[in-house]
Length: 397
Image 1: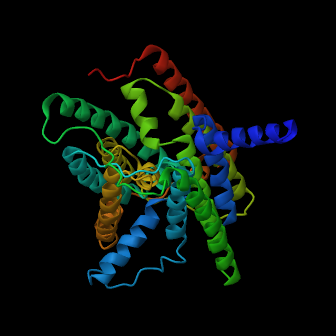
Image 2 (image 1 turned 180 degrees about the vertical axis):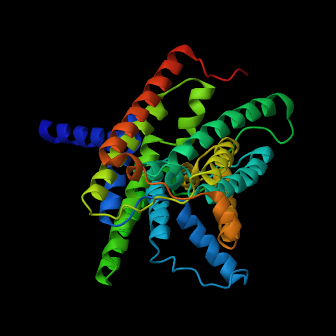
């Protein structure tokens, strides 16, 4: 092997390790999520997670005879495809990094997965979306309900952290370490095969996108790839919104919060441009949850994030790593969201209590809205950095 070939091999290995093995910087993940959010909206619709989970649960309840109305096809539902793509992308990333493994939680964590999943589903139903649709995308779409949910998320995370500290001091039943069951003896080295399986999954996703396009569902095929991108980015950067709201109260660390703030700013500027010039409807993702729905739902969801150990998107991408606790939480997240959403939709009173739509540019205009939201986000950025240095809002154990 000559020197040029040896150098090329070393460079290829370095690039492979940088992209597929080593964790990406958190800010890189935030910037890429913000950009991909705009691309997804420009392509067809905004990014969401819980809608896909609900679609799958709707089909289950329809099959059991609990729902009379047939749900929209999960194969071509944009909600379903985005969530499915996210989970496929995260699974591929986990496999290519050799990080997939079944991890069994202790009994208490399994119980918390059930409770936390129900809280996530209930909170998302009230707020009109999870941390993605109800908060990230809602603010990007210039919906005032996103800011109300943010307040609820912060309060819920603070109370949830208080509970976790109480739990550590008072509950010993069912505690322990998450374990990886010992692998059975096999001639196959699955650790070495994992990256190849991950690569095959990515290729199959692109093939599936082409099949959608061939049959006339070009937008669905594109959204599958957008979901794939979200899952891959979130896994590689370990970007989880639960940490965005937990860490400032737990350790004071501001890394995740800063990444989320930058991501929202990028996404918001892209959404505002598309709406302002008329390329997308102004009403898109302006959720009718401004009021108790966003506030109470955000609080319940924020508390559920701490109990579960993951947000809506975080629970989805970490579940496909083999985290059994998150798999359980994801199931109950989907089931509870479907049931609570059906209950709300069936009641005129509940829909009125949940809230109403408020599109911020209707009040401040686009220029005023962009200025106000940018100032708000920069103040939040300064606040989390100041808190990191002073630990002013860190909860005492």
